[in-house]
Length: 639
Image (tube, rainbow, N blue to C red):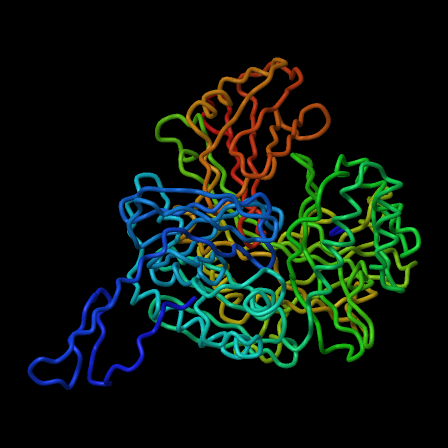
């Protein structure tokens, strides 16, 4: 399982003007003794309400409002994404909003700015509007010290208009063509504005000096790239926005979440089976070589969730990752990402395909194809915490890569994957480059080494079996490598983040391949942006504790500065020259927290041995973000 508009004034002559703060007007057209029309002042809204949604409501979210003087107030967000009754008493407009909560396997924050009380939404579209207007990360609005003022209403309006132009077809088809992203009321029910959030993936990025926004079609097609000054591209809805998506929520809310809220596996399975949510062709791989069909799925899924401590929890944040409404006219297919959460227990980053067949309702399909292909991205920073003065290792080292995780076979199964080629979009986005971005194979030698686990294809030329990381250049590479990586990253922003993966049943890449189109989960930062990227920054006490650790059995607590871009996921420590067996300790990080504690077994005494503490997280786009903190007892060279 990859498991009320303000009252309007009528009857005034067109030559009259109405000031925004006027309380009385002299009637137009009169001579001496003209009547005076006295208008009662319109009271400013003293409360705030709205919707927080990112294609699905955030889980356990909190919305915080900050006024012009830096005063803040907060309120919880309900499970349906709504909040209300947030008092603005004593606060001064304009208002900046931050909404933080769990979504798509990470703890994320999104932003918005409004000029008055009343409705104030927080969505990826409001976040993008603020990012474009500021030309910077909107998180600066809530940074320590509150130095960043919100952008002007005029600049916000200008940038919102640019976004509306890029999304024009989607907005029109959804019936919200002129709606204000921040202040128009809507519900997170997969209709109206919420349907637009389903149909478009909105991301922000930086080249080190400028912030930009990318908008891609999940339903329909197209790619748009915008910054503060320019915009190019547009999205097309096609017939995708005519499809009713509400049945997808039924599957996850009324079916899966209701089932997993049960106290025992039997009740869970009974609820899940009774919800009638499984397609006749449902199939899902739960573990190495274990597949279940729709008959076995309720019991198997509920047993799995019981073993993971997830019964009593919820299927959270069912967000559309991608949809295909064109390949099969009789079956519309979407892949939905979600998390299963029960208190601090969680199963993150899961995916399930759902299908809408002609004349039927949305149902769970399980896996979206017979092939196990996943394309991701990762960025790593390595920091030496005890480097002697002047050592070359005193400067951080950066590495970026794409991961092409493709499960192969030994030729026995019907998929029989032994090789693959991966292609980027061409310049105008209409097709694919002629030269592959990467090639991968599964050799006989690597099949022999797999020891019962799934065999995975390796990048051609790699030195180890299953090595599927495609380098985008790092600090230690030869001249030009990082620039080539930046060029590939630019291509993903300008041409869209999808790749075509051609799969072959032989290592000679011969014959007609099976082709899949997959979206890259996240894109690494450009090289110039790495130095200022919001890494999970270990605090001073934690660095000292790592450097001083002598290998004895102990418990060590580590903490890092929280940020709104990268959410901590897990932490591990490797001692000496290995990261296996008893030498490796790992713990998951509770979403939203910026600390974790490791319980360490005794290790061989060696003050100069390498200690590597890896703090791993994910950003809003699900790219992996790691910082590895290294200590070698003050030795001149460590790595």
